[in-house]
Length: 131
Image (spheres, rainbow, N blue to C red):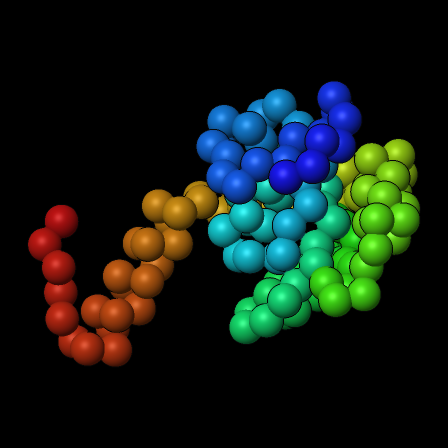
């Protein structure tokens, strides 16, 4: 991978969760895990969806005001740079990301989601699970 400067990291693989506490924004392909983990930390995004659920997730990010969407096939360095400048320098993106992150934490996170899914499954199948 080419050298791109001291303020940008480009690696094939990074320890995402520990890194999220050290960055100011995230550029990604709008994968659900990366988007949710980024928003949990209150960070704005630049999303470039490729396929599957990524366009829908990217739409949710932009509708929430928590990031900027760029076209994966068409966004060059200047376009990505402009989007990144926007999310880094317009405080509305960070404020929206922080609102979404708060809503995730207030909803109970992954534990609450798993509990809700178990309850839904039990209701639809008639099964009960001992607690």
